[in-house]
Length: 335
View 1 (cartoon, one colour):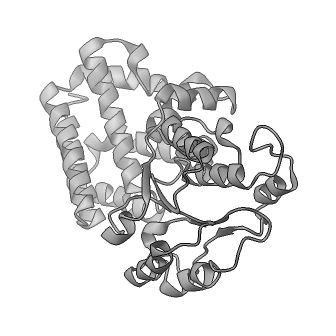
View 2 (view 1 turned 180 degrees about the vertical axis):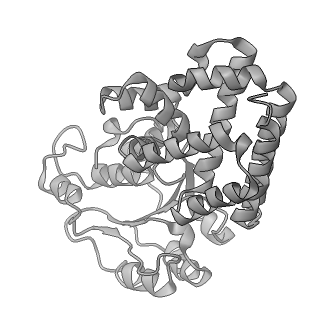
C-alpha cells in the first residue's frame, strides 16, 4: 500500500489526516465511507503507515523497519479485523479482535490501530460491543471503520466517529491512470472510465477483465437485435444474465450509456462525443431511425428499472419489463 502521495484524488481527506498528524489532534475513531474500489483501505493504510513510521525526515519513509512491517501486513500494532461470515461482522469478532486487546499497550509504536473493512456489516450487538471501547478508549487506540455507507451504523457509533466521505474521481484522472499506467488505448480507456463512474478500483478491474469485454459484446448483441426478439428469446437473454451472475446494475449502466450515445449522436451528429466510438456505424443507423420519444421512453424505463431493483423487486421481472420497453421502442429500426 502506498503513502498519501501515491493515492490519486481524495485530497480533502488526505489533508485532514496530515493536519491531524501535524497538530497531534488525532481522533480515536474514523469512518471512511465510499463504495468498494474507491480507495478507503489505501487511505487507511497510508494513515497508519504515516503514524507508525520510525524513519527520520519525511514520513512515511517506506524504508524503515516499521514501514516494511506495515507494507507486508505484519506490524504488531496494526490490526485488520477479520470476519468468517461473509454477510456480517459479529459481536465475537469485535470482542476477540478489538475489545480483548485494546488495554494491552502498543508493542513498538505510539499507536495501536484497528482497521475494520466492510464495517457496515457489523451487527447491532457488534456495534454495541465496539461502543464500549469507543466511549473510553486508551490514548493510543485508533479505530478506522471502512464502510460502503453509514446507514447501518447506530447513531451512537456515528456520534463518536469523524466521518470522511470519499468522492468519485474526475474522469480525466481515471482515464489518465488507464492510459499512462496501464497503457490502454484511448477508446478502450474512454469506455472503462465511463463505466467506472469515478471509481479507480472498478476501472482497473474492468480494464483487466476479459469477462467484461465478453460481457460487453454479449450486451451489444442484445441491444442491436432486441427489436426482432420474441418473448422466449427475451426470457433466454434474461436467464443468461442471471446464470452468468452478471451484475444487473452493470447491465443497466451499459444500456444507459448505449442509448445515451444514440441520443447524443441524434442531436449533434458528432461522433467524437460517443463513448462507443467503435460502434459508430450502428449508432448512426439506430439514431436516424429512432424518435426522441422512443429514446425518452427507453431512458425512463431504465430509471424505473433502477428504482424497482432498489426496492427489491425481483430481478427477472425488472429485466423482463425493461426488455419489453426496449423492444417496443426500437421496433422501427429496420422499417
